Length: 107
Length: 121
Image 1 (spheres, rainbow over the protein chains, first blue to last red):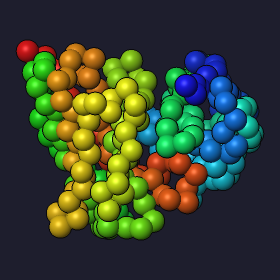
Image 2 (cartoon, each protein chain N blue to C red; image 1 turned 180 degrees about the vertical axis):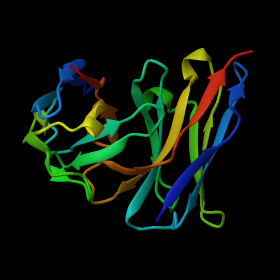
Image 3 (cartoon, chains in turn brown, yellow; image 1 turned 135 degrees about the horizontal axis):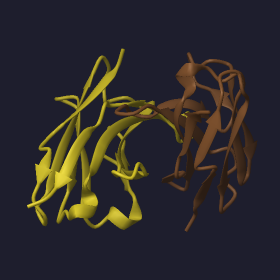
Image 4 (cartoon, rainbow over the protein chains, first blue to last red; image 1 turned 90 degrees about the vertical axis):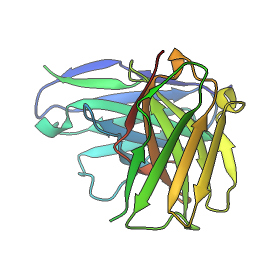
């Protein structure tokens, strides 16, 4: 079975920092990967799809990269609204698996 | 703008059937460009995909849940439904309906607000 490992589980940052979150799939998934942001009590919000494509109206400080098994989400110049939880999600052979989540906290 | 809203009982007894409805407004579930799915989030915050449906009724389910889950679509009511049988406390979660674009690389681009379901006697 395919698995997804997301790291780190917690990340502390200050406004203006650059942060990187990683996800690793156990099998090659090409670029079938998405990134979401979730705020408390809200549904996840799509940020990036197909590993590197920015969803409409998502700020350009968010970027995604990677293919195959290793992927990263980078946030440049972290803003106050960026603090929350981030999830990756893979799509492979009609299976959808989410990463464990990364909580981005204020340092 | 399309919106999705989940509804259903917030409390279900063990071994009974969980039934939820997702009402779609501002757009049609009978879209060739979209799939409709159910995803749940456990109290510990982990997310689990439950299954997807196309407007023609074609479904795909997460293997561990396949024997207990049924997703259906009602194009006349513009609704997606979820039924999960023989529930236990492990099924306690927030349940989301979500839309997936057929060209979106497997990503869910629009979500309902979610509805909390607790399994308890």
